[in-house]
Amino acid sequence: MTHLRKMMLEELQRRNYAQSTVDSYISAMREFGLYFNRPPDQLGPEQIRQFQLHLIQDRHLAPNTVQQRMAAVQFFYARTLRKPWPRQEFSYPKIPLRLPVILSREEVTRLIDSAANLSHRAMLMTLYSTGMRRSELVHLKISDIDSQRMMVHIRQGKGKKDRDLPLSPKLLETLREHWRTVKSQNYLFPGGRGPDVPLTSKAVWHACRGALKKSGITKKISPHSLRHSYATHLLESGADLRTIQLLLGHADIKDTIVYLHLSQRHLRAAANPLDSLPVSDVAGVRPSRRKPAR
Image (cartoon, one colour):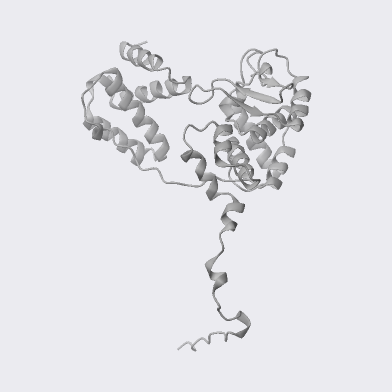
């Protein structure tokens, strides 16, 4: 381990960053140094600008991905090396606001019924029934399923926060069937490297991808789409935004408000102004006559 990497790692650990963020930041700085074939402490604002343009113009990375790389670069110079550079030196690309893809209830049913095996079925049902993130799913332990209180415990989710989620009786039945096939006394979804190693997030993605292909659903979705569908269906069923915020583990309710744009019940509640206009019926309107071509 190089001295610079050790310094950055210690600063990340001091601030209790998530391991996924630590790995992402270390990888981004390694990529930054390799691009110029020089140690990052010998580079400056001009190289940062060139690197950002390389990510956008040459590699065509998405704005979200570029923003993550720039966050790592800013952390290295501002927190690790404590450079007194102005914030303007670390520009971030504007991220377009896009609404997430939502599955209908019928499509969720088709997706779950198209799972390749019981384990995949249990994963998809858990994601939709609780709205948890796939990183939270793979770290679920058998002891986190509280069948007495009918709760699922999320330990140290995003932001290092715990939360409880209601446990559906239908999900509990499926998880019990799945548990009988699990050769682990620890993780509910153990990985292939051993019973005490959690499943990788990529494996959950493949489980969802396989079910999607078999179901015939043409929408482009990921495991996270089940989380979006869960929140939207809750809102359509009458749940309030504050409750949904707590269930999803959002720190800011602004992240939850997006589901108002997706709820059919809320969108249809507003009367369309066209319907209140006394316009003539289509049957009484003469069709336009096209002029003969010359």
